Image (cartoon, rainbow, N blue to C red; front, side, top):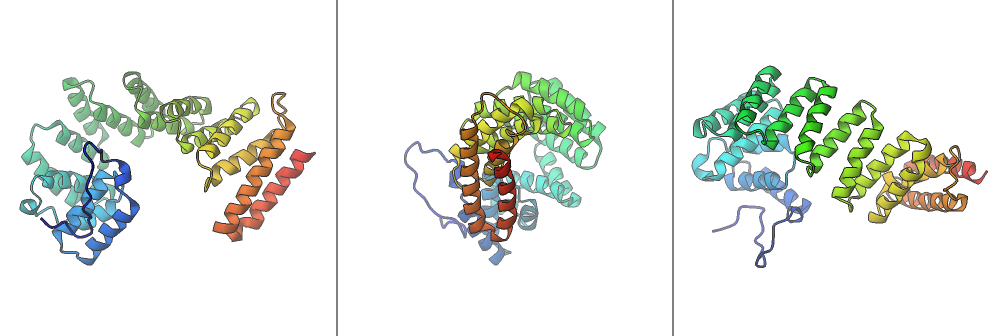
Length: 320
């Protein structure tokens, strides 16, 4: 049959996997425009929501705007209807459209009364209403049936975090990671929790795990460099290495790592480390300065004088 508006046909080789790269920004824009131009078109809205769902994008307002008209169109969507309902339910909670969320949840409950997935959605709806004790009871019951349910274990952390019980959330997430050490998202969440209570060394440990899990991520190297820079003192040299590695992985449009590298070189003037050579420090700062000047002159020329003033102050301290 014909493809929905805004979609493209593409032949795949045998065994070729669909990756996140399949869901390009251009495709999303094309689908969004098609859905906006034809607000009553079910295929256009269906294609847009599927793209958002498969690419794991958070576009809650858009999902509610285009998905609300699909809630009553079960026959037109077929089996995909239930996936759309779940997607619209979560998006509706995100933008506080509780009546729409309740409509979706009720339909899912009626269709799948014994589903653990739907039970988890019920727990999430209780969280959204601030009924944390009820949500926790739901999750406890689900874990009695399946103690290894990862999604429910994570929801318990969310319940604690929503109540600002950060130490309890940290303990809960540490217990989770004892069972699921390879969960990179959990390590990142734990790092953020530690940073929120200024436990920088613990946060650095989490990002070390993330670097091990994905050594080609320039963002993880940069974040780890920032944490070590915050710790200061003997950690500055290590911070500089991670900023440099971030720049090795992403040489262009990486202003955050360039600023970090320049700041580390400047910090070396106040904390003397025998293992850090002055000529290397000066050369690295010069490299960061040149790249930042290039970047700001191209993308944000109005900020260039301020950046150059900061870099000049740093350079004067390094050359003393």
